[in-house]
Amino acid sequence: MIEARNLWKSYGDNVVLERLNIKVQEGDFITMVGASGCGKSTFLKLLLGTEGPSKGELLIDGQPVRQEPGPDRGVVFQKYSVFPHMTVLENVMAAKAFQRKGVTGWLFGKAKTTARKEAVAILDQVGLGHTLERYPHQLSGGMQQRLAIAQALLGRPRILLLDEPFGALDPGIRGEMHQLVLSLWREYKLTVFMVTHDLKEGFFLGTRLWVFDRLRIDPHAPDAYGASITYDLPVGDVDPKIYHEIDDDIRPAFTPAPQVETLPHEQEN
View 1 (spheres, rainbow, N blue to C red):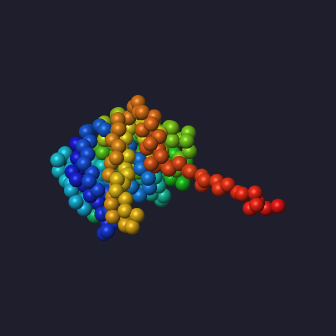
View 2 (view 1 turned 90 degrees about the horizontal axis):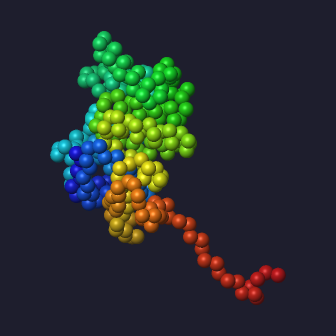
View 3 (view 1 turned 90 degrees about the vertical axis):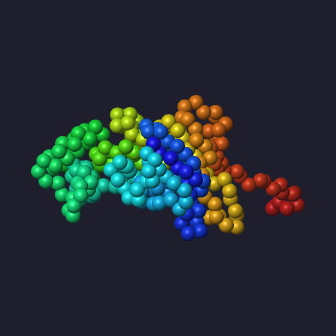
């Protein structure tokens, strides 16, 4: 379904991604981990179409990704992307309205009735059926993220892009969101790409785990080389040694400075 062929992304002299060659089957759930600045979110932007490759190709169904977001790709960010002046129901209906062609994007008549019915159904599915007339500021963080997921799914996308969607949530709420996303992935037969800094989350949620890292580093020109995918692992039983190796790459262990022995005559009285 999705293929990258020698994909590079640069911003001027700053190379973010280099030499990505991957294939993704429809229905895969890819979790992406790596140190900050290793191009994970940039790769999502390339899939979304808000950024274009500097070199190489990124294909969906054999065709280059269009350089604009489309209804076939839904996206959820860590920061809640909801409209504060609209109710929960209006927020989700707005996602449907924005897909319409025309100057205003307003919904009228049968189109509005259909959009409302679909919005209520998806809000029920994500556990927000009792909040239709509330405003986002009246919702908890977890509920706001459920709302953002409902917005993303209303257009029935084939691909769901999640950029650290649970990073700001408490551990208990994150567990609930994990179960929600897994159930929606299966029901909607989505292909999912999710950025996370939590390695355990990455191994729990996906079918494949990608690790982004730089293979080449020039201390005199730190932006000269970009990151690539250094591990592409099936989720399941993983050698603990590999797990700790990846964890150390993402979160280098603190090594205390060596203790210098003090000679007796140097000690203070």
